[in-house]
Length: 365
Image (cartoon, rainbow, N blue to C red):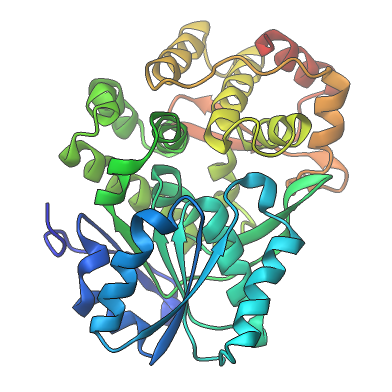
């Protein structure tokens, strides 16, 4: 499928609204890219894994359109989502005398998008920002919605800013080089949309998960498009996570505890979210909101997607300690995203420590 064959989605945020383009071949679509860059030079932030695959393709496209490219190549991995790595971006921006109007393009997965966006939000108090996500997880989740951050040893994504991109280009052809493990990790965030608000999408995923794992182009475009549509609707209604947007964090409070507790990068974000989603499902069942059959259904689709459904055996007290640093803690109470039904999530702060601990214990290996 060539670029331009599907209409872009739009994240409706008034004068800050922006398009999400989803198609194969976008990295070589100079007309479309240059329409959003609007400058003589652009900074491309990427990493050591993605740069050899796609940097030259993007550089060639932009140079043909008369745009000079300043590459910033960072080390790859969640372990490098730190102040030290962020400073490498600022070093490059200052050394190359980048101006407030110089666009920063994030070419990579969620870590690159988060750090590139945070740098763009901070540099001269805000420079133009474009997302070119190259992993399934970043295409369906982190590239859309303007959440940017770095990690802290005490908690994931605790230091950051809301900063919306000017455009998102999900070039589906980049998924051809994505390792199988990363593809499965991305499916955790895809499945999430079905569980929290789009039951027909969950049913579609149950029918087509093997097509997605086989990288069927039409199925992948449908999954990315439907996920982005859900994310765009939620972000438009609640940009800064005061209400409905928190529902996008199903499994994330437990998942972030797994990532932080094991050490960033041991489990992929999507893997931790999958195990966290099963803890949330267990707790939802213990609260008599969903049935044992529902828990088995949720487990089954994650297993078919190649995702872990048992959480690592950290002590329950360690989980609770790590979760106490979560952004959803309010007035000292832990607010969890749970399932009132399959296809309907809710934010709930009424679960006791004993109930939460029991659900963690039940899902640990």
